[in-house]
Length: 429
Image 1: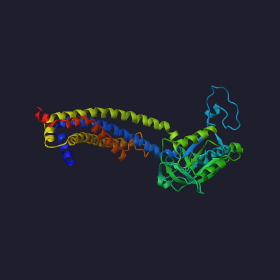
Image 2: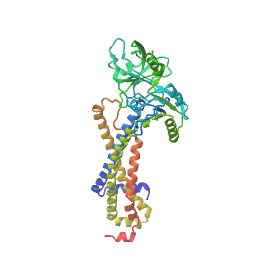
Image 3: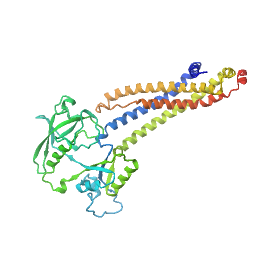
């Protein structure tokens, strides 16, 4: 008996008791639907977060700040002239900075290729021509960062012309008809010196950034040329030790860094008095919440699959009992134990295939409906955010897992059928 014959026979045998088969497939369907929809939501949210990682840093970059010890329980700390932060109160107020001396010190850490200070400037306003003026903040663009772009491209730090990545929320107020029309246009920043004199800096819009949950809606990323001009004006007239202070620094890691090497770099920087965070560290809590919700929903799906497994066992045991004489006849005609085992195993796998397939398709359909409702509702201000995504590989993996569970559940009834004695089976009433 060839495999195709076994497959055909298994398919027809499933239809002998339609109600029992449908109920078993329904149980599998519930588990497959729950797990597929859960994985879809997790993939959609994770995909959106991955697209937004550039808003807080780059994958191969460490964000470095001064290490702050807020523990005051052990008594007062001695003054250290080498340490920028001198009190817990100063740390709480946000007055935590790095100096040029800190930047040079960080460069001595093994495993770091380059270190650049993160520079922030606060212009008075941004304006397009003679249009309305709007408040805005700017921060230096970090090479390697990935932003979710609505149009255009990222700022070029090697460009000799000032460039800015404009938040999408500024496009219409500044008088541009669309994201595409804003790209390449020139805007003007007004910023005051330390003495209160206002000066103007022009910059080209390199691209438009989609609105994000992970970034400041009123902030723009500036290339080195623009941020340098803005900060030069903003700090003009200030003492050098006040002007050359930075909220943080970005450190470019050497290629091929392993997890253990990365931890050694973090520990090395910690011993020097700095706190180093990767993008994964910064979004760790968000990821943990998403993973926790995902695991809970998958757990409920797993319970449904466990119940479905007992349904498969019951269905096949009943099938073996009802077809005892038929099994005896097949074995009397020369069908081997392995072929009988394979016949019932294929029935179990088919139950898993149909249940998981229908469940996955239903989950995808429900996911598309959820996306439309969410996009028109609570996600309307976050373009590009698809609440559910269904990677083909993930769907295939779920179906394969469920079919494997179905096969394992059908093993006991299949073994019982394979071990039937043909003479006793033919005598069975």
